[in-house]
Image 1 (tube, rainbow, N blue to C red):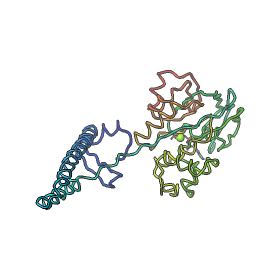
Image 2 (cartoon, protein in one colour; image 1 turned 180 degrees about the vertical axis):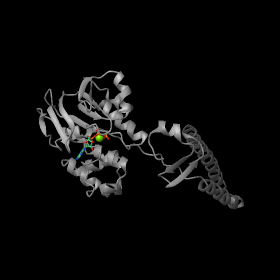
Image 3 (cartoon, helix red, strand yellow; image 1 turned 60 degrees about the horizontal axis):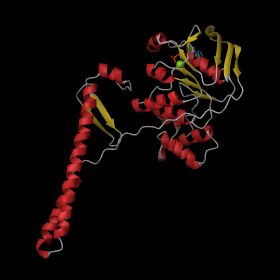
Image 4 (spheres, helix red, strand yellow; image 1 turned 45 degrees about the vertical axis):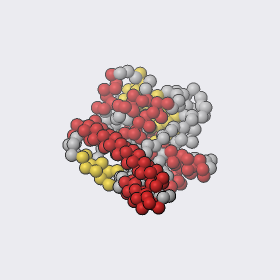
Length: 323
Ligand SMILES: Nc1ncnc2c1ncn2[C@@H]1O[C@H](COP(=O)(O)OP(=O)(O)OP(=O)(O)O)[C@@H](O)[C@H]1O
Ligand SMILES: [Mg+2]
């Protein structure tokens, strides 16, 4: 099983294969999840201690050898001490690179009117089956709406209609004064698989200089050669990061986020959630992730497929993981 859901891992696994990206090596731990975490922390502490000890001893040997090498009587001994110190350092495991975390940011919202986005009686059917049936929506400046519903309830369809990517059969989307939409698509359909990482960002933020572009890519962990990769080969988490990077300089004041924590490792997920929590613009978020709802602090909830809208209250939190 491959998963970023640490609660699931703690409940299920009794062995952990840790793929260390710095060494491109798999370390096998024959224990469950919690013991694995404790083992890794203890290993790290031991390596740090051993390194510090060896470095201290080697420095003392080198200092002694320096004092002895000038006199011919002790020069040979000094050289051998010096070599011993070098061997001691060479025998150390190379320092492990710590795994990097993306510094994920969301846009600074551009000014807009009181109600930047709304929808009136949206109706959409596929193959004669209604998916959206008379959905009304008012997204006020800075407001936070969470959309809940089972798989197939129509959440992604609603966001696509709001983003203007799908035309409703009836009803309409009302674009308010100054609206700038940022759309994070669940299936990454805003990313062109044939384009490159750099190309996507350059198209999403055409006013950025080459240096600013590199800065944003670096913050979202695309460094050096990664920037020239075709988008189609990116991992799930990398696509998520790239789509979020494309929003940073958009000035979006309404974000449509369709399951934005999918595929992210726990550290990157934490970054996304912190950024969502601090974002001052309006958010319409679809999620099955309770932590994402906690970070959003929604003021309203929309339940699909019935399109019932209500003020957010703690009871709805139970629905998040179920729906
Ligand atoms: N282009 C399409 N053609 C035909 N059917 C479609 C199309 N797009 C969506 N549907 C159908 O509409 C329904 C709603 O799909 P949607 O992707 O909006 O669900 P969702 O609530 O986002 O689900 P999930 O939680 O799995 O992401 C599904 O039954 C789906 O099969
Ligand atoms: Mg969906």
